[in-house]
Image (tube, rainbow, N blue to C red; front, top):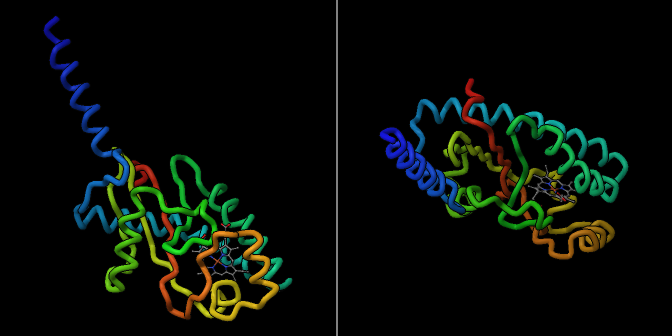
Length: 194
Ligand code: HEC
């Protein structure tokens, strides 16, 4: 019987600890700078193919006009994210002004997004420790001239109509070049250490 007590206690403590760190919105921060730099590099590496494929899909679809490109964005962005999400790795895009409500920020992303919005000086890639053995990575997204076709102040009426049809709750119009648009996020296991 002697081992049961401490084992049980450890289990309870472990469960309480797990509960604390996985509570909605809870994350432990800061991570030490050395690990932070390595995890940030890993996060950048994970999001790189997502960004690249998204850009390629958008560019080739834009050749057929913005209405077709919109379909590419709508269908391909989540499909690319799903395909690249494997072995405990997940990624996506989010924003403070969403076009698609399905891109709403996860609990751990929300405070980081709020910081990006509030303070331009903090718009750099960031990492946080998530629930036990997972890392969260975010990277800011800025509006470039080609984005204005579908997110700018003078979107063509046909394009705007299509956007309103597909996204009745759209909040992602009226952006200007260089304006903060949102973020890429990735989650990956701690074992995936460079
Ligand atoms: C052809 C039109 C089009 C162009 C050009 C375009 N987007 Fe989008 N964007 C969309 C659509 C449609 C969605 C919704 C995609 C979905 O359903 O996930 C979207 C979603 C997003 C999201 C995800 C968050 C949200 O609001 O749902 C971000 C971030 C984003 N766009 C940034 C950009 C940036 C940066 C550029 C320029 C490099 C760009 N977009 C160019 C149409 C476009």
